[in-house]
Length: 181
Image 1 (cartoon, helix red, strand yellow):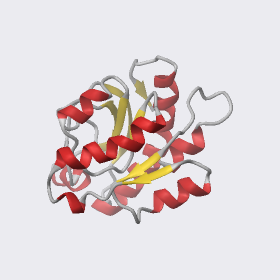
Image 2 (cartoon, rainbow, N blue to C red):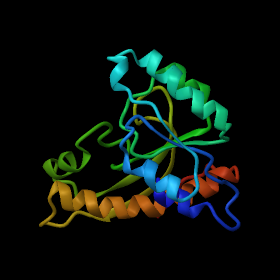
Image 3 (cartoon, rainbow, N blue to C red):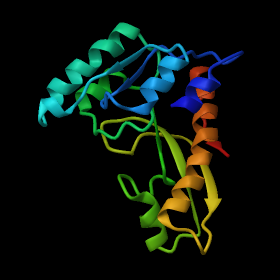
Image 4 (spheres, one colour):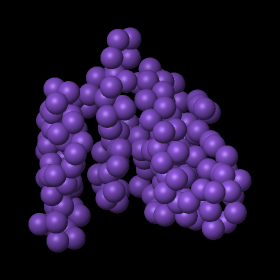
């Protein structure tokens, strides 16, 4: 999130209008506020599994901010098709694997367990199917023999901080062709 916000300067056609979280204690909220970006939080826990009610409350500050593009970054809640469809063609996410490989969680350990030679990250459009939207960008790295799930996650995160801002800039200019870093 910070990398995205920091990238939206100068000739970048997008500007951050809101950083929202389902965790009121998320460090990203403090970082965004320090950058002068509006923030909102809607704690999902009081909704006790009522995703529709949680999403309705989460939509309020998002709709008020009137974003052209919604970027998910570290948002670890599965969104319903109703929420996603509201932003169809305008919602992006980054995933720490080379999709379509390893949608969901534990991507780094899964790549190591499979004996993969490479890993990476993917920026994709969000659709109602988890980690399955059109791929807009990917960045790859070689898995090292000494890699653990944590060391691989750290190295992939550095790629994410390069890839997501680059894809967002292109996407905000109407470019949807695949970007490979």
